[in-house]
Image (cartoon, rainbow, N blue to C red; front, side, top):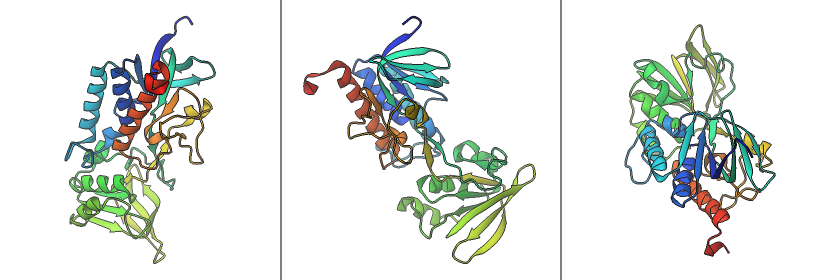
Length: 313
């Protein structure tokens, strides 16, 4: 095909799973291309601090992502940032990947396109996005230094964001719909030790209000049936993510009821030569460590698919 670049492995997404796959794919000798519609690093860039990634007692998500990007490029993989995949064709032996910049042909593809922040869909959320409503503590936290903020959620990301904001904001309220956090105990303990953090148990955010910017929120207590309005300057939504699997679905890759890409223990999808790893998959644990492991597995399976080493014959 004229004007088509040929590769052996194309990885869609440059988060931890994609970068790990890129490292192992390139080191195995595969001509490897990583495509990323934004900056390489994925949502790991948004993590203020990570204390559960092996080898680092504490490291910021940005620092860890930068190390992975550097290592991936050093291994020989090409990383194209700000290149958006627009169309896929997996019908033939050669898999076609079209982007907003070029058309590629490849023998194997790994989906590592991650997930995007989930919205809570309450009145005011869309209207005040970027004007007090945020989904990234490390990105927007410094804008709320000395101010009052509310965090929505009960998992690790909500707890980490709350702890980070407690060092910037004058007061942080964490609203959680249950009576216990889903976050790790180490994080929960850290929250209990913060004097400017208050957890609103059994509660839900019902509305975000303001004029030009957020100034109040409406909170409903499910246990007491009490509704009250609280003054806040910012709302940080941390309620999980939704998989970026639309491209995969359009290319006939199977997904589950929640739109996560179905993979087996070797990260294989229903299409030969097509794999997936990280948060876009139906793997139950969504952590940087598990994403890296899945990316490695997918890359080694792609290598086996192309090279057919002795242990696969």
